[in-house]
Length: 306
Image 1 (cartoon, one colour):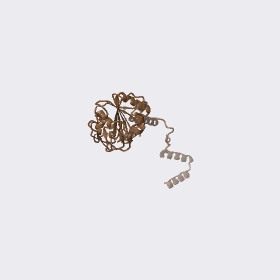
Image 2 (cartoon, helix red, strand yellow; image 1 turned 45 degrees about the vertical axis):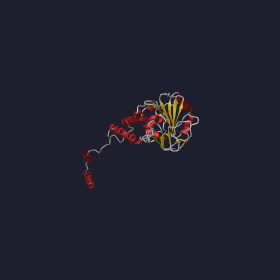
Image 3 (cartoon, rainbow, N blue to C red; image 1 turned 180 degrees about the vertical axis):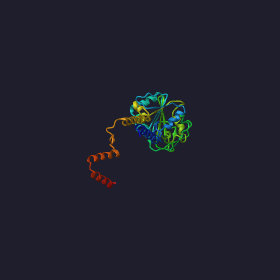
Image 4 (cartoon, rainbow, N blue to C red; image 1 turned 90 degrees about the horizontal axis):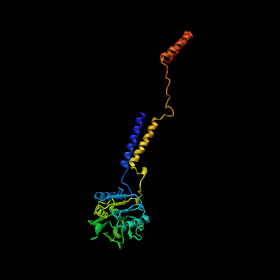
């Protein structure tokens, strides 16, 4: 097999392994309540629903302290890894200027203090079914029932509007006006996550939380560990895999074409002389001896050896 065929075989094998790994190994994944996440706890389906309903959708990877937030958009911050005080102040300024903020998740008590000094009391267990309160307004327009995983609810709702109510009087959603804008506080993001978005009227709630028709929605992804990519990191993973395989193929080609340290075996193996030449040489030697007895002895030994 030639060197070119060997290199081509290796390249094809690596490409096949790479494609197989990408096809079988890349399952649903992502941080909880991230619009990039396609697993059960992500909100990629919500982002897609908004796009199909005519809402411009942006996934913000710039840190909140540096981002430009347009009050005409709705900003979504769900289940952040952390929320710094400076980021909380930035969000409050955005809301006061007329923005709409949807914020919260299953760890609200540790993140909301950066935004609200004394957030409402939160309970780690809540009603799986929430019913819309009559006359609650546009936030639950067209919503009768919302189903969640029961992973939390606001136990105390005083000082806030509660457009949804559970069996025990708590609410998964509170809202409050601030300046010219509004804050929507979610105690549990599960109704908007991929696993439950299609249940009951959850999809309608997801559309209502976005605000008016065609209003832009910004999912803040910097709070989930996504940053701005530059250089090689900005290339898609499939491109980086292809470049790596091409580099490997180049190295193998160089090794195949390069000179070896030494031959694998002797370049020339001396072969046995032809039988005719051997017989002629023996005949010449015997002729020089001029001794018939020696010739007879030699013939006898040859016969004995067969």
